[in-house]
Image 1: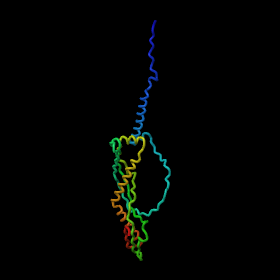
Image 2: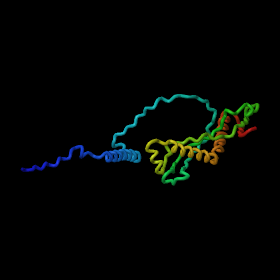
Image 3: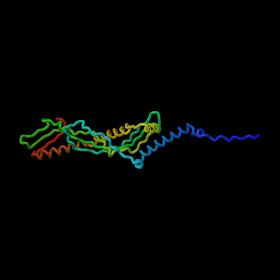
Image 4: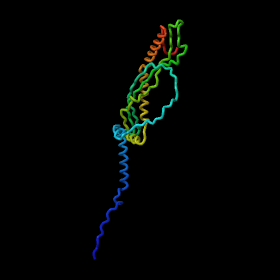
Length: 227
């Protein structure tokens, strides 16, 4: 009586299947690779050209909200630049874990003007033969600082680990807005100390003297401030 040895069954496809936990790990690696690729593209804009990126402007038409008559004489304008170093950290965590530090160069202008709309009839005196005129004007004032986006830029931005993770899931426009607002405030403070209003009053005086003398006035006096 002979005995036959049965061959070992070959491993089925089901047995050769990859375990589920390995699939999960592979999926996570793929997701992280895609996120990392997106970050690399944002850091190195030149790589975007490899994928044929195009920009489409789908903005709606601009709407006129209001019109305001101007009576200001813009007599001087100053150009300013400031380097903003803004750091935000946590009271209980080190900056490497939670915190940001942004180095930002802000450039903008501030105008100085004289509001001629505030000049009344009592502020202008003309003699009988119309050869002498005296004018009393309000002091020059500073307009709001205007930040120039073409000349303003972030030099560097350091973020803690938690802040980096948060930026992967949502944008944080407040961080950029904070340094811009700080730059505007510093530019405004610098304008107050620059003597821009003094220059504006001198330019306004020269303009009025030239205008009135061209109309036949020989003596023109311009003063500033309350009576």
